[in-house]
Length: 180
View (cartoon, one colour):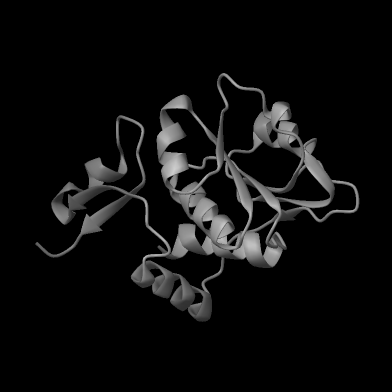
């Protein structure tokens, strides 16, 4: 869980300056990073708007998004303005999202530099560095049932190559079981 949970924790709390009562636009809300971001933002007291494909709506809502925007059929600008955008997609979606950020708000990107910066805000792009204390907090949240992981497939060590090179879209993180 280190990578995707850590990205969500660091991106929202530390770099995104998320506070209770704020709104978060979480792109890829049904993916491994997005489900963590959604849960962490919700736990912090934020209103979460998740995005993704239509098929991901229920999963994003199940992981805690208050609303869902289908990026293939809905219009992002219709959601209004938000305090924080957490971007795992980049490109055109990042560009459209920049216009939604409130003055003083924060776009956070894990896919590269943020090209458009909000007025009086802070744009953040980062790579997660493991932090033992933060990872311990995340593990405790999982143990307490306050945070769920997004596990897709579980494969044996013998099936690693095919499991990590899927021919179809993955649903959650793939776990490789080392012991039978």
